Length: 286
Image 1 (cartoon, rainbow, N blue to C red):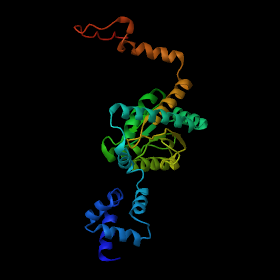
Image 2: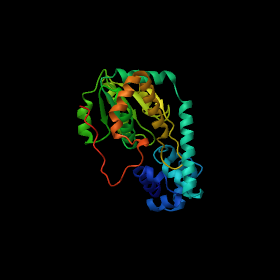
Image 3: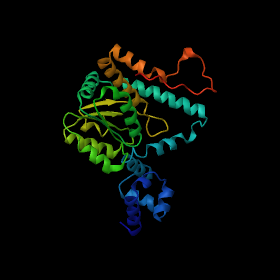
Image 4: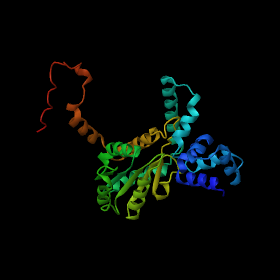
């Protein structure tokens, strides 16, 4: 390579993600070369032009730069809030429909059996996956003998300390959507190596967590603007909780739970509360 080509190559290698998202003028300016040099550089690589170079570069970061490309594509789209809301709602409905298409009956049953027989159910997630793990833990709590949340709280030292106790007889639920969390996948792989069973809640069979799962349930995560939608994953978690409820909760169980929480609920028949009166404490069940 010429000196200017070498300088441009060094810049691209040092800033691959930034370079993949730049226009030709931006890249030339950032690398301190001319636009003509960039054009000669990409042709020297055997490419037809800068458009092909950029397309090849983007392929390596498709999931990571998805939101950037979406915003670029949306530049001419309507900006009215109602139109954006409507598009998001249509995407949510499409994700639920696609999640149903991806549904595997055997996987649903196996996942429920694994949770019901587990000593400890470990929920692993980072980023938006952490919020999904919290939600999933909450709705599945009545059916778990023990639960452990590994979502980054307390730092990696705490997570590793607790993860060391997980092994055979325990079940891990790993939750990740684009952009996929490397820490989630690495931790799931490690826990599987310790003998735990693994259930994956992710967006598609191509998700990088799937090879480390004994069972995978898919909630489609497409979104016109955001990097991913969580609607499909939430729907799958609710579906799994419904299966667990039908398998384990009796009418007597539901009745007892309702009686216990009734004092904390709003009674529609009681009429609106008097704002001047403080709420009465619930009666002591004893």
